[in-house]
Image 1 (cartoon, rainbow, N blue to C red):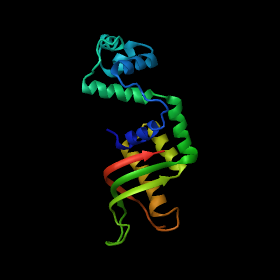
Image 2: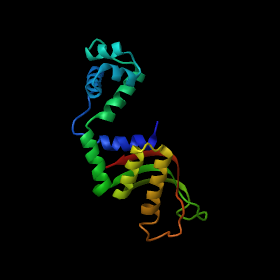
Image 3: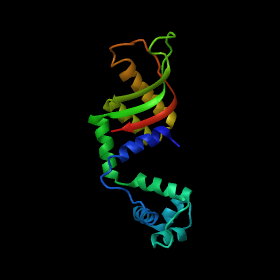
Image 4: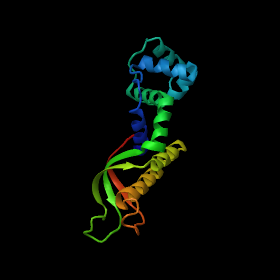
Length: 185
């Protein structure tokens, strides 16, 4: 499970104008239409082509939990691509992205100072350039570690350094022990 990647996807999915199909047969029909055939869907979901056909006809209605999770993930990944692209574009050019996290944040500082690393709950609006970097890295297939580095750099710049107005000698912000992470556009 990718904490940062899933968080970015969830933020984009909030901009959907219509709900994705809920029932397994409807989800299966949607995937068959998108991938132009039952064989491609069967390979994607790691089930037989016959199973896909039975879902499409409504002969099977309730998938196993693991198949249900794969089915929902694949449908949401393909649902409303233009709206997804517009939301990402808006965040990357004008609106920016909001990060809400509860994690151990800070940097090496004298004991007792306010900036030593400790558990913090932050809600910070990041400017568009950081949203663009996060989305570009995600699309390039970057892992959670790289996305975490970009988020830590953004928090260093915006939260700790206040856009260069303080803590100028700050080198690196530690972003560990993440208890909660959510993005919003």
